[in-house]
Length: 260
Image (cartoon, rainbow, N blue to C red; front, side, top):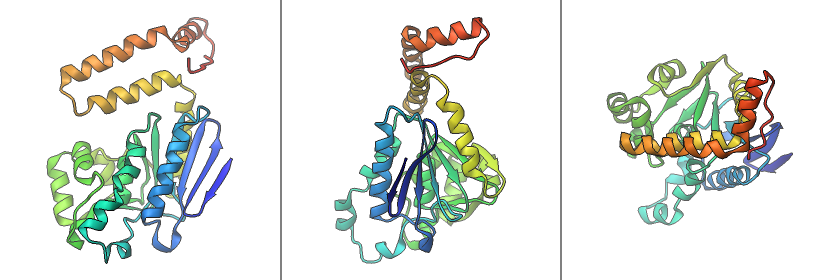
């Protein structure tokens, strides 16, 4: 399956894994309204496809996303930004019940860094670069850059990056806790697909419940988060996949999960 959407290409390169690629080489895959709309539509379509268990997002031509399309900002006023309601398109990724993996090569700046942080796992080439340099334009992050970065790397590193507009190398990002896995240059997508394939072979209901517990519990008090975890744990005991997983373990064979 391959759906050509102009600036966003949707495909299924391996079984049970959906791939979304941003393709605007002339501007290093910078985000404009069209990209945001098509990106959200692609993620939503995979989220609603029972044959897809994991989603991978990446950029083509050596970059993830170099930021927002600055030319589009030049004549925008506050009312224009308000009426665009671009947060709707980000929510499609943030609320996706399936695991999302970002495969990052080259630049992941501004909106590109925010897009990567909407994922559950970030796989980055050692030559990738992360950052939120909006302050240099008299602006600030507007799609979660202040809050997701804060939760990923802590207040003091976040404040340093946001207030100076300085960038992070992939190795610095990995050391700070922003990157899950480093790869050689040009291999981020390859490794992301390997991880996606591994996750896609796991029982879907357990994967979904794990993601929900982590995401919902992240901003909740510990006791509330532990209750969420406990309830999800208990619910999984009635699934066919739990019975199959335990039977396969005891019989020393590979399990065959059905998502039930």
